[in-house]
Image 1: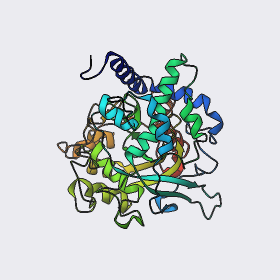
Image 2 (image 1 turned 120 degrees about the vertical axis):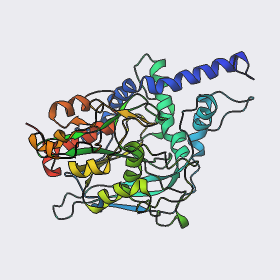
Image 3 (image 1 turned 30 degrees about the vertical axis):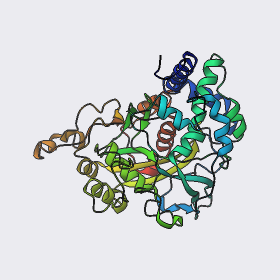
Image 4 (image 1 turned 180 degrees about the horizontal axis):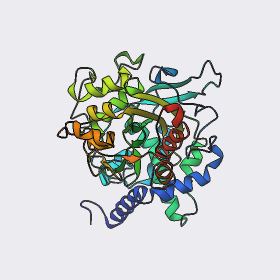
Length: 416
């Protein structure tokens, strides 16, 4: 028996832990069913995300053509949403736990689980189709990670409960029905993830990187692009809450996540690791990635935005293309495994000189220089394998399909 609980309460706690575990254990089946039930919300048939017309532009956009707009924080408490969910987790001393995050924290806490300010998406301005004005806009205010977890990630818990209860027949429950449309961002907190497909190009071929997620709070055991992280300001909410601060920029999140997921630095958003905003130019862990992404050596492109079918989380889709020499210099100290997961597939050996120069020229180079880990071949067979795999998260599948579709525009060589 769990300490301090009656036998009835212990059974409720065990059931909660079981269902919370199912969110990860059954995630591939839950995603498949979620897509089947919400197919009418998928405006772009190429990708397994919920989208509206214009959310995925006709061609990749420069970050400069993605206009971010910031509004002062709103006084949203999401009380109605929270109240509708309280009955889903066991009470404490007869009193209902107020939120999903409080229940998870008490009964089944993941390894990395903490509150942090997060940019909350309020709306998407569809991409223009005019040849001379191909741009889009994303509108934000300030929210928090736990507001998102309590009002959006809770959809995953309800989906697991309904899926088990109906023997896999459905994932839609009362809370999803209450929210009604996934595109209504008023009655829940929708904080986006920034998902970056990383591609290393050489003369005649390219490779890409995926991560098997093992230490994260959501979607464990799935495969995702790397890096991927929450769109959040470092060091707390921006001063004055008027312009979003220095981190109100997609590349800031990408740089931070490259340092963590490629180079193995600690999670900079964890309050125990940081209390001040990141200085990307001066801090050693970020400086080389900062120069690559902002200096133009690495080409970053925006592919679109969509909603994760299971939890309706907004997913911002990016691709970053590195020339091999730049990639090898920036990520010479790349690690195969971090606290979040490990590289997928061919990431088991480090690159050698012949990976860049496949002929005899490699013997003229310094064979002692450390190089990053090998990725997966960016070819049609490998891309399709992962894009069709139900264990690959929908945002990763979307990045792969769109990058392959636009490979010529993106300048990605493909071995034939």
